[in-house]
Length: 306
Ligand SMILES: Cc1cc2nc3c(=O)[nH]c(=O)nc-3n(C[C@H](O)[C@H](O)[C@H](O)COP(=O)(O)OP(=O)(O)OC[C@H]3O[C@@H](n4cnc5c(N)ncnc54)[C@H](O)[C@@H]3O)c2cc1C
Image 1 (cartoon, rainbow, N blue to C red):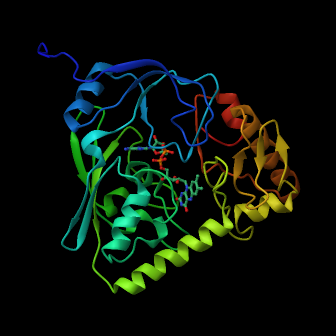
Image 2 (image 1 turned 90 degrees about the horizontal axis):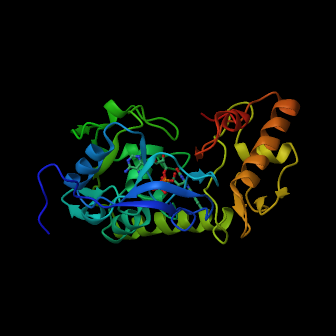
């Protein structure tokens, strides 16, 4: 098909139900959604928006979407963003590459330092934004460079010192869309790498929740002297608590699971009650690790989110 100069190269879909696209299986529709398959298409889509707000959805493994849906535009990256290449001493991956695929490629090619991505759902783009990792290690430790597209369509390359990563965050503008990264990946002993991966995976799958939809850890760990968020949830008696179709998991009390018919407000109400009790009984304000999209400001304030 021939396109006129300045005409968009991406197709915008309207009123797209998001519950089936997001891991939680919760949430209303996106007003408009585009699935750019290349940097050129992404630039074209950004130009279409003319400065209007937008966000990127990976697999939604860290996002709770409101039932009322999203008034801003949404991107889901596909096509060339799914690249995954083994290089000498490195792995290069597009932002749409799944984190388990990156972990699997590292394991199979005996590359050191990716064990902590085993059984972490999501994409490389979401992992870069959330600085995905385990207690001891995280994704930005492996980043040689990452590339992102700015709202103006400019392609920028940053290294870890510029990103200034910390626990589940990076100091880069929220509007930047990660498109790919190169990770340092030295070869190690194949057997040791395999054992490290499988050992980590086994412990994670045993201790966390994989049989029901969730978005992982609900709260950030509050740190000393309160320890882990799950300990706080336990201490205030919320393990196993249920509202509507949402439940604080019996197996891991920092996970809130969708029992099948959970509404976004069920999850939020559990969070509000947990946070209220933690403040009343322990004097701390828990801070959400998950991202909350499409909620009214006063609802967000109730759970300490923006
Ligand atoms: C069972 C389970 C276990 C988990 N275990 C862990 C764990 O051990 N460690 C851990 O850190 N997390 C864990 N998580 C949370 C989740 O897997 C990570 O946060 C993951 O990085 C989310 O990736 P995603 O692609 O699904 O991002 P999404 O949830 O879709 O998005 C998360 C954020 O990243 C942004 N984003 C997505 N793609 C891009 C992009 N290309 N450019 C810029 N921003 C982008 C989104 O806009 C959003 O703000 C777990 C979740 C589950 C359900």
